[in-house]
Image (cartoon, rainbow, N blue to C red; front, side):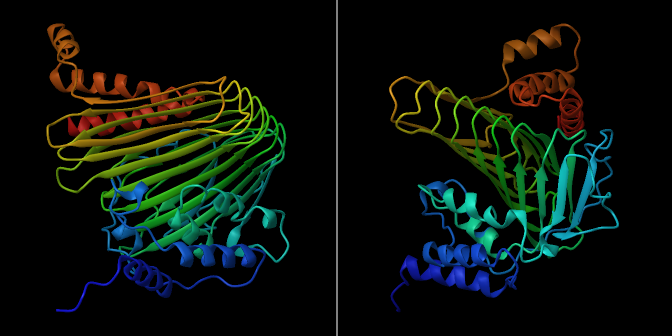
Length: 431
């Protein structure tokens, strides 16, 4: 019997097969960054279950040469942000759809399409830069794959206070689609923008967003993942946060066979704020549900604040994962870092896997983390039932209350209301 191949050989073969199945973009201002990303990817190889930050999530379907087909589901629900005045940018199976998108002109914004950008562009010094920096100290091979192979995306420069949100809408129309998108957002000092994201995107979806915040700039990011039970997706947000800038990101995940959301935030200025939050609701009764939030926040500035708030509601064998780290560098005094991850398990078959971490090299800081999981509080449920509240409604109220801390991270009341409405509709169908 032949000896088993070394794991390093299997990793190299998987990486080579994945790249061979792609048509890598050529030329343009991104060419040097793409070449660098490709070299880094080939050196590190695509992830396996043996990698420290992938031991809770099997990346096989994300690294295979071909995407597993995913049925296209017609969603009868209205768009989650349909009642909000916003500028819409639509991608269908990873390709920009000009006919379905709004005019891309809006005061305070410069928007262009990655696939159309010429050899000289303001984004030349940004594309792939934050992703490359985010590879240290933890390797993120699927992000390097994104920088090397992304075929489309948007380049957004924010020069003022934008009057309405910009929504990136992803539509999945082909069962075998495999999409890789890369977005850049550069926010000038004191400028302010809200970015929304919604939709399943593709059967297999790999997205990256690099966000560069200038001094006193503000970035608000609200993302809704759902509507497609069979989707497999990995997302990456890399952010560089300057002095007195504010970064806030919230993600709602509903459905999806596999979803991995990575956030890598680098607080480089003083008196800056970085909040990242998420709510996940998963029912694996008919289709598997595995949702993973992996977050790494680095504090390099003084008097800065970071928050990681993640809540998951899991049912019928669904799995939730949280891996969160706060790194406080030497000299980052007066850091205030907080991290909480909690799961509500609606049956005995679901599971929540958590790995919270603190690494601190400054002595005048306030950092804490906590992680819990458990069932619905029987006392609270009995209280509601004793006052005539039907069982399903009582459970839904308690679930929404549990998720409230994460939703509270959304500052815009209208957007928070849209998120709550979508959650209520999901709960009404499943409780």
